[in-house]
Length: 237
Image 1 (cartoon, rainbow, N blue to C red):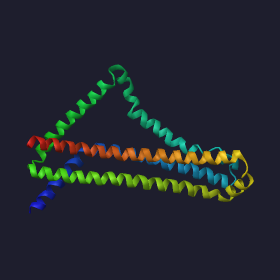
Image 2 (cartoon, rainbow, N blue to C red):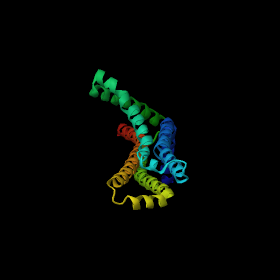
Image 3 (cartoon, rainbow, N blue to C red):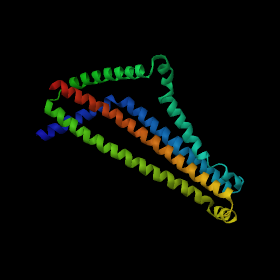
Image 4 (cartoon, rainbow, N blue to C red):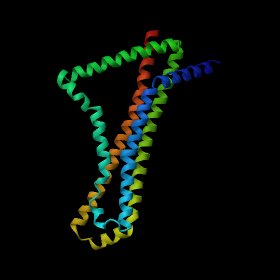
């Protein structure tokens, strides 16, 4: 009976977090969608279209030697947008008030938010001290598993991204073989190959970083409710 009661307590706590984090979840889903579109789908689709047009002689083959950095165009564009929305928006305030003052303002805002959530948590979920401890420990375990899951999905996404790029290269495999045969002693040919490999690695790196940051931001949102639960526990002691 006690075990069932504790399970119900944890379920009620998760429902509470789910209701309160609804707006943040919408932001997270939107950000993950943008990362997928700008850093995966858009460059892969563009490369596929260009390679198909080259393979069908619609575009000249020499164009393939000049478009490798196109892989980075979409991820870099989104990275600049992400950096601007997260960092550059605060630059004017930092110059006016100073970095420390702006950081303290954010801390004050976060403190007010935690206080409001703690009051709502105590009102909606009047747990006993033991029940709240059990909820907190279970929530910590779930957040730990979520952190591992984010890393696993990020690595898996990187493998898929790399595999897709290699698969697209096979669209012009025969032409590549001829190209390497005719230019195997050409320094310029080797430079072009290296540039293409570097552009793929950089594109993959940007995709992995943005994907991982988006997932960790969602985890950070959930961890804020863990902080509130721990503060509520301190009040009960």
